[in-house]
Picture (tube, rainbow, N blue to C red):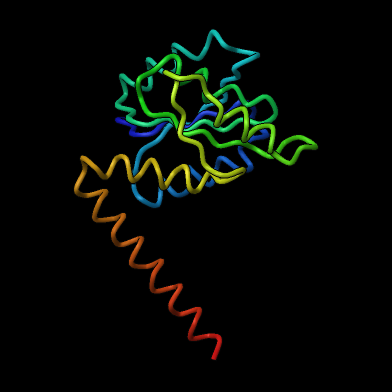
Length: 160
């Protein structure tokens, strides 16, 4: 199977948030792979996973991590694919520690970062990246946006 997006999380408990990315990618008919790979517990698994994903056709990586949240940056250090970080709310700091750890990458290791627990926006950002070179994905993205506009306008009608 040719995949387009690799979804990675540091723990299976992160699936509660990260499954939203998978659901959105599935709704756009974009093949993806999901894997638990820890920047701290299994760092030796990162390079082989990225190599396998790239060989399978991955064009974007979405990484969700909480607490120290080093996963997105570590992934970005191993690949030239764009990495989108999803900081997760998993500590008493309500995800702010994860947000700062994900967004504050050193120069040369870029990581696009979405809001805390916002795996849905990570998927949509990946879809926008893929749409730049795939007219079928661009058409589905245009239809999604049109549907979002219609739903929003309908909400105004409900206020009357």
